[in-house]
Amino acid sequence: MNLNLAVISGDGIGPEVVREARKVLDRIAEKYGHEIHYTDLLMGGASIDIHGVPLTDETIEIAKSSDAVLMGSIGGNAATSPWYKLPADRRPEAGLLKLRKSLGLFANLRPAILYKELQDACPLRKDISDKGFDMMIMRELTGGLYFGARETKEVDGVMTAIDTLTYNENEIRRIAKRAFDIAGKRRKKVCSVDKANVLDSSRLWRKVVEEVAKEYPEIELTHMLVDNCAMQLVKDPAQFDVILTENMFGDILSDEASMVTGSIGMLASASLNDSKFGLYEPSGGSAPDIAGQNIANPIATILSAAMMLRYSFDLDKEANAIEQAVSQVLAEGYRTGDIMSEGCRRVGTTEMGDLIAERV
Ligand code: IPM
Ligand code: MG
Image (cartoon, rainbow, N blue to C red; front, side, top):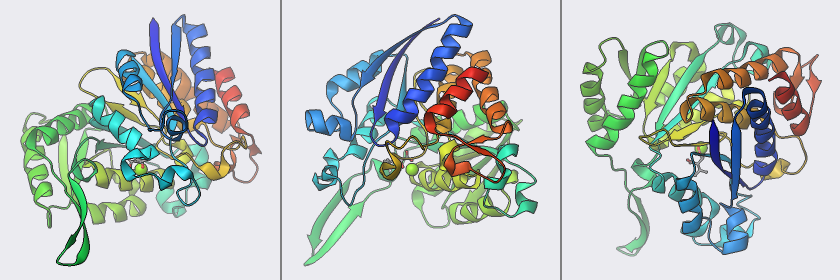
């Protein structure tokens, strides 16, 4: 198969972790007889430095014409980087939001899995982590507070900032369908998370999700308020299969879920549109404080590449090979610093990539 990939390495640890994911993909291509063509694109701070804007129209066009986008991370240290002296719509993050919107990537899949081997890195009590967990957070990615009208102005002499949270029923329905489809291939449970005791948008969310549920009688639907969900994620994460939620709640809950797996450096993600096209990136940020030191964990990016093979190319065998290689390397006791525990062998970013590529 020919895979035409756009690659956005980005800022901070982005280039380091993407390099390792490419290494693993190249190994897959060699072993299974695929041709991968990479086109490197600039986004975020790296694009601001060259073009003055975090995302150019040309970059959007090239990304659109590719089969899938592999991404590292974008952004820098907000306190020290000159990128954050720019107006909000020209900072690195604005590039990512514009790309998600331009490519119609409304469905963000963030799996949070506790690897048996990483139980020691899990911050939860042992009786909780003993049960393990394997959940998929389905975050709506192109609506809600992130894309509603916003404004800062003086109202009656008082500085006032307004952000609007809008969802229409079509936006809710399409992400709900995706969540139910995915639950059908898993443990057949969807927990829809909202704040329906306060927000109108959540009450509409709940109504539409219930309508969609009627088309999926084999799937069990429950609802949970977002504050309770934040608590349940540390109290009993094993209860969750698919968590379906809106953009901002999903942003927050997925960081929380990732940390209970041991490290945000383990959390992959896929952002999909209504076709096979997707953007694949680790859920974590650019970690500028550790950039360039060869200590970042590349596993989240490598697992994102596996998701790409599965969701954009239907290459399940190849995706499984990557996931198994990751498990194997962890079982053999190799760890980057973020997931290090006693008796394990500490390795750097490149060595971790080498090990996983070899096991493939
Ligand atoms: C994420 C990130 C982004 C988001 C930022 C960088 C805009 O936190 O992908 O979770 O909030 O969506
Ligand atoms: Mg986030």
